[in-house]
Image (cartoon, rainbow, N blue to C red; front, side, top):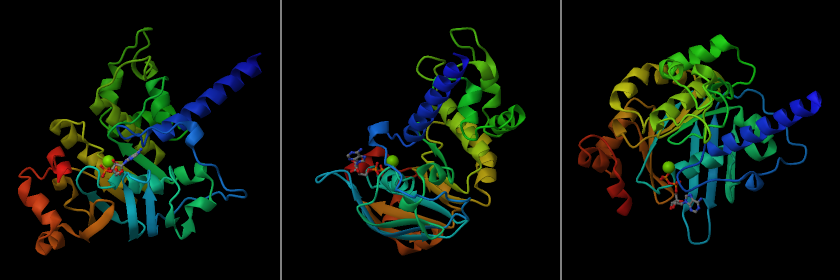
Length: 306
Ligand code: ADP
Ligand code: MG
């Protein structure tokens, strides 16, 4: 019966992992259930640790006949390149990163990592290549420790604490206590555990990504729930985890993307402009208008109505 208990534990942890994986790309209204998860192709290969080159060739995906998605996306991102993505809400930014994680199979074109079609590799090995911090990361009903360790099963305590320190999460974790009286890293999070603020969840997600140390990093509004003081504190952490990685960063606060190698501007499912911050300003197009109009360099919800 010990074996059985261990197995049950393992199965539920795996399931939670699956939920958490999918939950990580949960974006407000979008929530996938495991039944909707795609299957590996027969004979799918294990992807080795990627260099991190990302190629989208004529990629199209629509959620339904009458709803949005992305269309005709051609994009070649070099290994190690840092790319910012901006655009009004609903422009297709999160959809673009979703097809990269293969949460959805593209309906047109293909997505390649290091030249390999992501449909030809196991999803487990694909997701190992990608670290992700989003505006709403799911926490599962386990300890704070497990929630971070999920980024790299098998990590030891000091590695987990280091990641938490870098993400400015260590101190608030030490102060946690759940309703069962478990404290600090042992306190349980999730629906039935300690309720974390949005900013605390983002810092746990960041710690998870730091620990995971994947070659590709996706930041989808990764700092949206942080107050500016905490955001300033973890700027260094962001700089550190971005180093040497391919980065796709979606941000409403344009000022956070100035130093990116390239900024992509999306509108209605298309890439409409791209270049460095300076090039885009000189072009005088949509990006320049966003920059000028939002005095704080922030694309607000009002732009969704455009
Ligand atoms: P962004 O991240 O730029 O705000 P999204 O990629 O989330 O935009 O959405 C792009 C378009 O696809 C929008 O029109 C949005 O309404 C639609 N969309 C996003 N997710 C879903 C979904 N799960 N079902 C139907 N439509 C969706
Ligand atoms: Mg989005």
